[in-house]
Length: 224
Length: 79
Image (tube, rainbow over all chains, first blue to last red; front, side, top):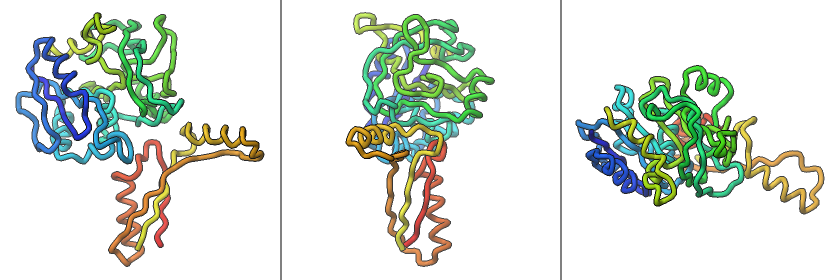
């Protein structure tokens, strides 16, 4: 199992992501955005969190033109598995690999805290180790995490089981921290090979540090 | 030629910054403020002297990079 992790100027979660996947037994490689190809043995590509290009213009807007992104699109369009976490999710929506957009949190503040999430659809490799309705506790840390999609787009997400996770309280009742449409925290594409979420499963790997609920999420990819 | 591009959130997409500023104006007793929308202005200086060509180029810039048309509208003025 080889996990390739993208690094843009301003990415800051690449080493946490590397540590998380290596602790699960994967081989990892961090790839600088100026490269034009991905390692040929890549089983999973992770677009890690951070502030690529300082979030200039819009979060993820400049990163989508980095040299590596052509290879990322080709990889995704050929069915390769891609996971975007936080800024990675923003990059994937900007690049058109995931539907919708992330805008400024409704409360205008940067939010950094643990939050509960409910599993909405587990019929995909990312969440298959969890059950629909499970509530997991995963940290969020974002300023532009307010997921937006128009009503037609939302219907399409619902019809195709593309909504992965919603922000809730610990009892699974909707609790929306940032104004996201339908309290959505993560989505996948129609083909279910590209995944994006604002919360950070790679920061929830040790119960000693608050939660190990991220383990079950990242493990889903490892059987590949 | 200079292109002045105004980018704002689409109608129907909640503009939380605009809303916060609206509340602030209310608390300063500016009555009669119906709505506040906040956007950004991008000024692009161009070599192009043909207005039509410039408009085509700048529209392409907006579609590809300057605006995210999922959530934003843009308006171009050439001067």
